[in-house]
Length: 114
Image 1: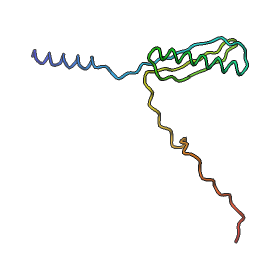
Image 2 (image 1 turned 45 degrees about the horizontal axis):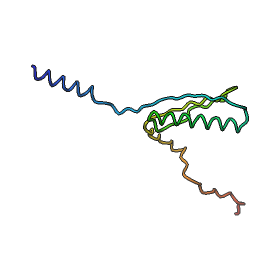
Image 3 (image 1 turned 180 degrees about the horizontal axis):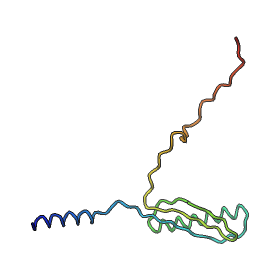
């Protein structure tokens, strides 16, 4: 009975000690003050915030980032990004959404002749 108990205990420890392949994922949200509401100021502020978030993600060891949300508020810009340490697998595109390059033009119907 005792060898069977050791075998079961060993199997249980192996099962629970095996580390699953898991990615580190973080949602990072930050804001920056907005000097004015011109398009140029908004774009520059968003670019600066995205750069800051990307640097922070890289400092945490997260090499892949994706912008989830950008909000332009009365006096600030808020950016929310998803960051992970592995690049997510690309989802398969539905058959109808694939862009396969330019299509052949359809000939226009000409005058009918009998």
